[in-house]
Every structure is written in C-alpha cells, then in structure tokens.
Amino acid sequence: MTPPELAALRSPAAVRARSHRVLDHVRAGRSPHFTLDEAALGTVADYVVAVCRQDYPTLDIPYHSRWRHFSAGGIDRFAVLAEGPLAGQDARARARTMVDLAVVSVLLDAGAGDAWRYHEPHGLSIGRSEGLAVASLAMFAAGGFSSDPAEPLRVDAAGLIGIDAATLARFFQVSADNPLVGLEGRVALLNRLGHALGARPDLFGDGVAQPGGLVDALAAHAPLGKLPAAGILAALLDGLAPIWPAGLVAEGVELGDVGRHPAILTGDLSEGLVPFHKLSQWLTYSLLEPFEAAGFAVTGLDDLTGLPEYRNGGLFIDLGLLVPRAPLDPGRKHPVTSEIVVEWRALTVALLDVLADAVRERLGLSAKAFPLAKLLQGGTWTAGRRIAAERRPPAGPPPLAILADGTVF
Image 1 (cartoon, helix red, strand yellow):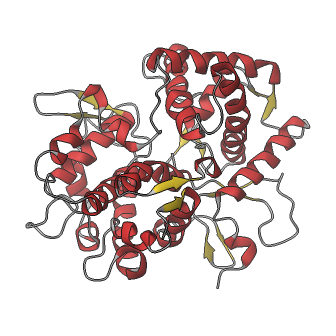
Image 2: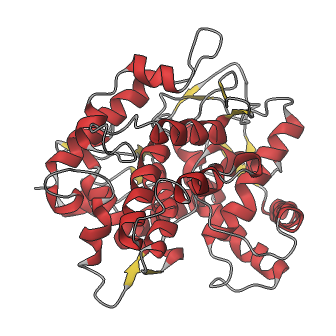
C-alpha cells in the first residue's frame, strides 16, 4: 500500500504547493542556480498578451491540447476521420476514439530533437510537437495501435504491446538522416501502456482494454454530467502509474514525474520531493474536448497547473524573469533529474500562476474566462517558442539544454 504522504503527491494541488515552495526558496536568495528579477514580470506579460492578440484577435482561445497540433498548417486532419470512417459513431463511441488517439499521441509527445521531421505524402514537412502529433495521427489512421485489422481506428493493449522500435521508426520515418530523440524510450512507454491497460479493467474495460474505456469508467462518477478536471488526472495517475520509467522510487513506490529539491522540508517520506506529472497533465488538458464531446461538463480547470516544460520555462529565462547565476552553456546537457532542471520546472509551474494574473489583468478577463488552459495555448507555449527562435535561430532550442529520453520533456 502506498504511504499516504507519497500518495498525496499524485495531485495537482501537490504540484502547485511544492512548486511555490521552490519559488519562495529562490526569492529568498537560497538557490545556487537562479535569481528572480520580478521587475521583468511585466515584460513577460506584455509579450504573452501581444502573442495572444496576434494569434487570437477576438481572444476566442481554445484549450491548450494535442488537438491543436493535429491541425498543424491549418489542416484539420482529424476531421477527415470524423467525417469519414467515424461518421456513424454516437457521441460516446466518438469520445472513446478521441481518448484512444489523444493518449497515445500525448505519450509520444516528448521533445523530438532539432533534426527530426515528419513528411506528409504530398503535404507538409513538420518537426517538433506538431510533427509528432501528425505522425501519431497517421499511425492511428493506419491501424498502427490496434491488434484487430477489422477495427483499425482503435488503441488496445495487445496492439501497444506488439509495437517495437522498427515499427515506430517506420511510421515516424526515422532514419540515420532523420533521427528521433528517445525512440527506444517511446517504444518502451507504449509497451508499458499496453500492459497497464490490461491490468486495470475497472478503468480501461473488460474484453478489449483501451484508453477510451476511461469515458465509461468516469461516467459512473459523474451522475449529474459534471466531471472535475482533477478527477480525470487522478484516474490517469492511478491507471498509468506503472508506465513511467523506474527512476525516482521511494519506499518501493514508483513516483513517476517527480524530482528532488532541497527546498522541500517536510520531515516525512515525501521530504525533498517535487511532483510535476507533466505528461499526465498535458494528457488531461488533451482529454477535455473528448469528454466534452461525450456530453460531460468538465469543471475546475484551474485545479490543474501550468505545464513544466521547456517552452513555458524557456520564456521566463529568455525574457529575464529567471536569471541564471552562471551563464548557461548550450553544449552542456543537464539530466531531467538534476537539481537545476527540477528547480527550473518548479519555477515554471509557480510563475505561470503569477503570470496568469498579470495577463488576465491586461486582457480584462477573469480566471473563469481565461483559465490556465487558455493561457498556455494563447499564450506562453507559443511565446516561449517564438522568443527562443529569436534568441537562438533558426531551430530555437531551449535556453537550458536538457538530456532527455523521450518520456518527460
């Protein structure tokens, strides 16, 4: 049984609270890695507001989710499926299909590296997150995640377990000239996902175990049609806990996306531990639209946190809100478990909360009208990418280089 202080780390409340402790630690001047120039908050807010207004002049901003990436280049690729082979599905079945697709696509959405690109037949050449999204959608449409040729537009346990590096490389066009960071790590993650689905019929269905089983499982906890966003995340953290690489372990418990930082003083088993659950929260944001398509009203969006990834975090460094104590060496890659990266990620979560208020004030919008899901989309992720491209053209890598295995960033 998981000790309660460790179980408590599987919540967005813990992510937020511990990230803000790290922010207090840095504000107090105790960090050997960063200082904080809070006078630059206005600069960051102005930059983000300008990006929001440029990309969304009416401020009709959608959620930050994987569904935006499926439309890279202004092409609504999922609509081709929705209006074609999926046209006869009812709302619940459509939602199951959408969840299937979103889960595998998000889990494949760690940094692709600067060199890799996906080339659509007679279409675009796309890199980074959008390229990974389009590649995963194409693999899904081709039945690459299904074990049943008669049901190709499905993700199921047996199909995932059967994926190997050669299969993923073929679908993602990986070669010596088109290398994808963390290929083996991505394959292992998909294989573990298959085993996790089969182990939890309560969440993913008896018979055919698939991510879309969550739609029916969570419906039982939403009798009035209201589904808390934190409840979706809790189900994901519960059901998908076994899929994460065996990295940080406490009392025999695999903690998932959790780092260590000296600012966290608790006097119990959770001392020093800072949870992030970035991919799980990104997945939760990406499941909002599928659950809404099934007729649920998803509530408490801002119970989730901002995403501690390098586009959001890079924005704060590039615009001077976070100031490295020593110049960052672009040739030195820091492991995701290193204290400087853990601190950077925690600061990203906490500063997104602070930035949200400044941006809302400038836009004249309330937290309800402009939740974090819209700030990220409107928003900080695009702003982080743009300032990175300006500062480090042409590829725009993050200001702090990361040694990643395809499962965190």
